[in-house]
Image (tube, rainbow, N blue to C red; front, side, top):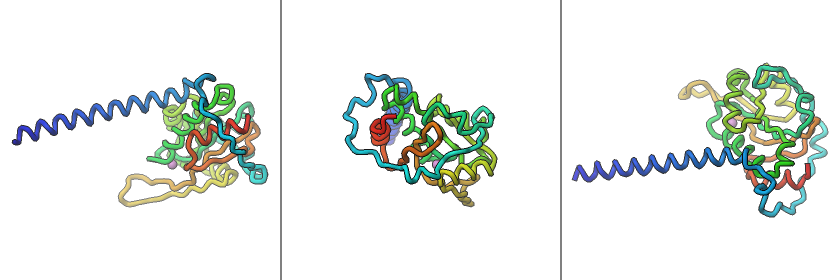
Length: 221
Ligand code: NI
């Protein structure tokens, strides 16, 4: 009786192990294909939506614009360093357990879903709202997990405050005695910015990668 139980547990564990391994490789492949397989033939095979994209012109009037931040190589950069491309921007922190990884993964999927002539016009970008812990070196490792082309930006407390304000980003420290360190509560919009860092569109966490790719496609960058 006991033997049979042990054997049962043994096979159960093997089963779980195999499942986890397959899941891991699937996720890896999905992540890679998001970047690499963005060929004009594969991308956006489904019908793009006929929905008219939402107009953000009024909101764009004083949104985004100038910033001074530090990139993942420790170099100071402004909006002019990115004036040759559109930007897909998400604000968060590298220690975020859930929302940030999900949204950054989504960003990779969006770019993989767009035709190459569109996706190469967009720089994926992650801006830290936790400059205390997100050093350039730390951000560099972090963003590369999602996309080798992703730019990670951090800066001084003042620089981060300024860029948060210009994007109306909400972020607040949450301390809890049961946790090591602290968490950041933060808004989770994704912003599509033009070459001059003016708002083109913004997306919420409930929009899927396909919704967003469709929307970008419909805007005809
Ligand atoms: Ni987060």
